Image (cartoon, rainbow, N blue to C red; front, side, top):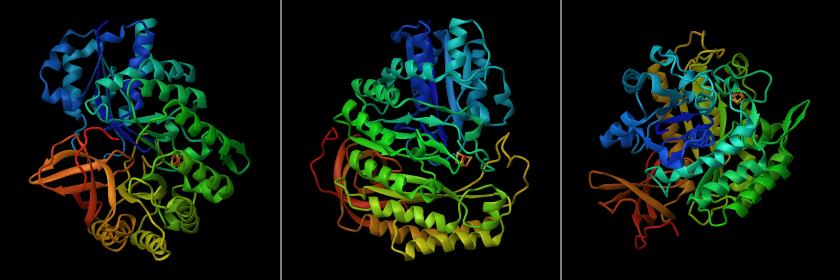
Length: 492
Ligand code: SF4
């Protein structure tokens, strides 16, 4: 059974799979194929960018018995060196490969007609593939945690076929689904069945990936790392510091020479409700992670009316407390040149109840944070997408383009650039920058990290090498730097 996995990339609020990241999807699919009896030699993995540039891959697909295509950007961004799969490309695949193709990933959450085709998995792609091979059935279902325990390890070798290998970041799942009883109006996470992995199973997967050469890991596939293995109480899920300690210690033992261990996604409401447990967890993370880490927080809005109408959980004063706590524990500079752990803030527009005042409320919130001398590693502002089966689906909303544009520029000028100057002042040495592409006479590079800063270096340096460089200037979300160290091919 020759199989081909085409990675069209995913970008969800709680999962990233755009190179250099590799999401769990292709790894689980590879594991499901092998678990169903396919030989590992017959599992071929390519990214959509490889497919576009290497025509021979089409021949491999033509000869394959089964093709799995992963697709879905529920929070699309702009990517350096990567172009996600397009709907016309998916349409072409369906027309060409019809019976032998199955498409899945968060793509199922979209509403485009091409994606209503019966070859699109409505639940977990890996489960449907496994059932097709073992039961000869093509029904949609969620995978079980026992299956993920097996598939995550059996499919780990696939990372070696990723074009960024060995410099790819493995996105790791701890749990998915939302533990709240009522949900934020825009969010797609509650559409997933809640499932939480055991700590040892996560560690076993990391060990398997590490044994195949993975050195970069991000605990990114969950809506709130601090409530992983949390304890259910009347006030919500209480964080479980000893579980997080066990997880991080286990990872460090399984992957002793890892080069990056970062996190993603923290619900700031967890910090306001459980500050002591949250502080303990933040300290544990600092102890075992690598610096330059980011706790991205879904704040969404500082406007009380938007907060109420969209069932958001927290108010500006709560956000400030959460930002303070992460700063208190994590703002010390680490050995790679960046602070250990800083908060990020996500803001969302196009929600119910939004008005001109919303922009003002959000600016006031950010200004207060800045005035208090607190650091934010990133501010992500995006427009909400109305997904099917979310409360926002039927809501009529309007974004005033001019206002939005001015607001973003004000945030850049008054908040982002000044904070970036504090995070990486001129003269800071940033270590292990991977040179990735040329843009005219400039080399663009990034540290392999959660939300890496873009670093611009004058001159055309050799690509795919690691360098250290000194910061000379700041732009919005990027730095200019000059190399100071002899180039080295491997991250030390
Ligand atoms: S708390 Fe809100 S944003 Fe977070 S996962 Fe639940 S519904 Fe989504």
